[in-house]
View: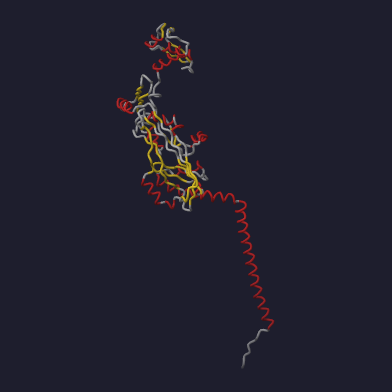
Length: 404
């Protein structure tokens, strides 16, 4: 028996091919529509980025490519009366950060690594970044006087430490250590509160300023003037070229009347006893030596000082008090000033005679004679010889505080 395979009619074959072509056509249409939708979204996003945020993104790109590198000035030297150095500088390594290089959420990991290497609390680094602002284009110093071992560690972890720079920095240096510490004073970084007061004078966060003594009194001369560079960097942060620069101007040198040799002799004479010694040239009034005990080494402030170290320093007999000027009331030594002011004012003559009393009330306070009785009428010579409090109290009240 011959089996005959049923054949499809031409119509049946045509219908089958039509369905296949229809499905393929629908798939193509759907794919085209999806592609157009995606392309439309991309085009819209590109248009938004270019037209709406174009200026901002261009600025961000420029910020990541062009950086401002501030160059701090070298602080002026301090010399004694014979030109010998009392305060200078030494070169060391400091660590800086670029706040704007990383997004704010990227900084925690970098801070953690820096904290481990530099032995600085993570919270302290975070505080400095927040005070400077995460969009700040300026280098921010976070550590001074770092050790060679720390510099090596920073280089080893450089892939994890984007936005970190290690550079040569000038640290204040006192070659004689404690010698004349209360006269010279010391330097330290501006804190945030100080910065708010000094911003109008061109100071920025992390600037080093005089905190005491000559360093503070002559800050305006010693500080110098900032310089800087505008540089272009590549993707790895390496400098490609310098676009512009301004040289930093060193601070002016200061010469003071202290004589190192006299100062050393005075300090040796006082030894470790609590007190003060002052040596003055009787012909000119120049201060040749000024010693106060206990004292401190101002070099410790040239690098980061911890809160614990600061507390220990404060607790050792108040070493920051200059006892030659503030440790004790002037007492009877001020009677020389009062006598001079009285006669120079013209209100009293060298022959003036005043009655002295057991007590003299000034501003509601009683100031008595040391003999509790008074000395009767006397002039300047007798009052000075007997150290009369009520005589000079009357002179001082007569000329007034402004004249004194």
